[in-house]
Each structure stands twice: as structure tokens, then as C-alpha cells.
Amino acid sequence: MSKINVLEHRIPEYPVDKIFITRWSPRAMSGEAVSKEELMSLFEAARWAPSAFNNQSWRFLYSLKGSETWDTYFGLLAEGNKTWVGNAGALVLILSKTTFDYNGKPTKTHAFDTGAAWGSFALQGSANGLVIHGMQGFDYDRAKTELKIPDDYKVQAMAAVGKPGNPTSLPQKLRDMEIPSTRKSLSEIALEDASLLITD
Ligand SMILES: Cc1cc2nc3c(=O)[nH]c(=O)nc-3n(C[C@H](O)[C@H](O)[C@H](O)COP(=O)(O)O)c2cc1C
Image 1 (cartoon, rainbow, N blue to C red):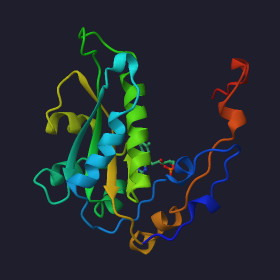
Image 2 (cartoon, rainbow, N blue to C red; image 1 turned 180 degrees about the vertical axis):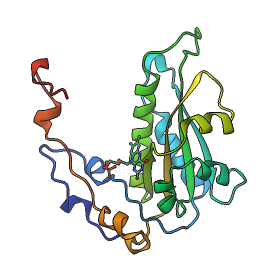
Image 3 (cartoon, helix red, strand yellow; image 1 turned 135 degrees about the vertical axis):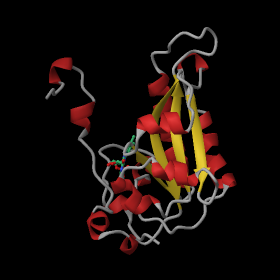
Image 4 (tube, rainbow, N blue to C red; image 1 turned 120 degrees about the vertical axis):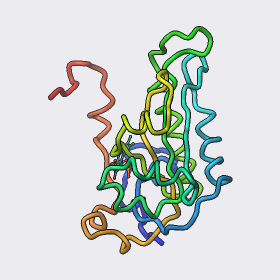
């Protein structure tokens, strides 16, 4: 079990509910199963996210470890992610529907709205004592073809869901990274003047 006290690593600049600070993305997981019931609580949180026209463009495809789809989901992962995701209990592929339900036209905010839903998913998972770790390290094209995802859905990301584990189970390089990260300062991200935006 991870003993890391996240609040020792993250100091907010302004008052904020601690749910936002204590969510982080460990990689150490115990290998225990995650039940469908536990997963549904996370989808329930995601379900209530706001969206343009209440289109609710988020979709979640999931695989529980041991189910017949697990090898297909796991096989999509980049090698670096495979080294630690084997101890997850579920993999979730996050999709957005790119068109409005009411007129079939493209939505401008399917990714934005789906990101909000993913945020709720991750916060609820953290509140429930689970490890939730977002991933872009997988083959997006193969995900589309192997899971037979229709053209009007865009693959956004994957998430590993698991029970917390001991960091000593990780390869040394990942064990050294098993520390809650910090953030840019508020003065870098909340601006009154576009001329203060930093571009590369
Ligand atoms: C969309 C997305 C993709 C990510 N892809 C990966 C990934 O492929 N592999 C990985 O180890 N971590 C991945 N991460 C985790 C991020 O590196 C992590 O969220 C970020 O460093 C902030 O740390 P925190 O989540 O602990 O606050 C991803 C996170 C998100 C939201």
C-alpha cells in the first residue's frame, strides 16, 4: 500500500477542496481485481459533467482484467506503460462522439466536454481510494480498428484503474517517479492580458 501523503507535496496558493490536490496518478497497483460495481461509480461521476447542448459526448469502453477483452486492450499499450499497467484491475478507453445527437452536425466541444467527464471520473476514483492513471501511450489507430469504433467517435485517451500497491513493485526508474507532481503557478495560467501568454 502506498504511504505517500500527497498534501506534503502539493501546496495550493488559494483555498481549494482537498479532493483536487489529493488526486494524483500513481503507477503502483496491487494487482487486485476492480469490480464492475467499483467502475460504475466512476462512470456515474463522469455522467454528470457539463457539456455543450447537454450532448454528453463522452463514451467509455472498458475491460476488466481477466475478461475476454483484456488482452486486446492491454495489447494496445506502449511498452513503457505495459511495465506497470499489468497490475491494474481495469482499462478504460475514453472516446468522444464528434457529432451532435440532435442534428448530426460536428460539435466544437466534444473533446472539451469529454475532458470534463474524465476529470470527474478521475476525482471520483481518487475519492474512492482507487488508482486512476490517464494514458496517451497506446496505439490510437489500432484501438479504433481492433475495437471497431465507428468513424464519428474519436479516441481521446485510456485510463488504468486499480487498487493502490507498493511502489517497490515498480522498476526503479518508475519507483523514483512515484511522487505527486507540482504545477505551474497561478500567475502563469490565469491572465488578464493575452500578451502575457508564453508561446514557444
Ligand atoms: C490524457 C493523459 C495522458 C497520459 N498519458 C500517460 C502515459 O501514457 N503514461 C503515463 O505513465 N502517464 C500518463 N499520464 C499521466 C500524466 O503524466 C500525469 O497526469 C501528469 O504528470 C500529472 O500528474 P498527476 O496526475 O499525478 O497530478 C497521462 C495523463 C493524462 C491526463
